[in-house]
View 1 (cartoon, rainbow, N blue to C red):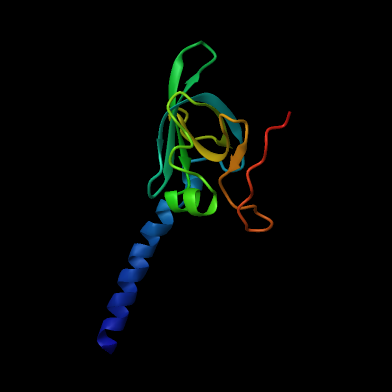
View 2 (cartoon, rainbow, N blue to C red):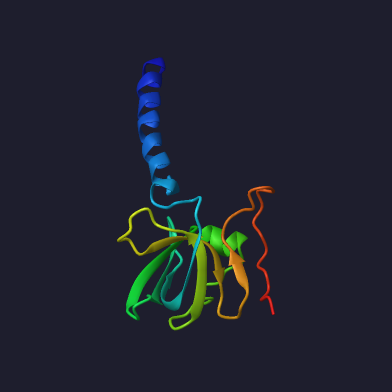
Amino acid sequence: MRYLTIPCAAVVLFFASFVDAHHSTASFFYLDQRISMEGTVVEFHARNPHGLIVFDVENETGETERWRAEMPAWQALFRWLGWSPGDLQPGDHIVIHGAPPRMNDRFSIRADDVVMPDGWTRHLFRDSTTNKYREATPPSN
């Protein structure tokens, strides 16, 4: 048994680096910057390891760009954030606030907040000061 301790520890440490690399969001997005993207939902996927909204955005020249918004996994969306599978439908108008991509040719955003078709804002991550998920906020009329 004691002869297995060192090889097992080496295997665990080896694979731990892959797990950490997968969750290094900062390597794909500028987490210190925020952008807002307004568009129309094409697809909504609640899945692991990350939820995904595919949406069309009209750029400054009038052309349509297909963007992807990365979100937390489905457990966080449904268990802790109150989402339902039918909350977003193709054709829904949304606004996504989040971190821009590091690669200029990559039409992707790390979604922090989603303004839903009904005007309510859904916050996708924990509050940095309380470490608790934030309640959705109503439209500001």
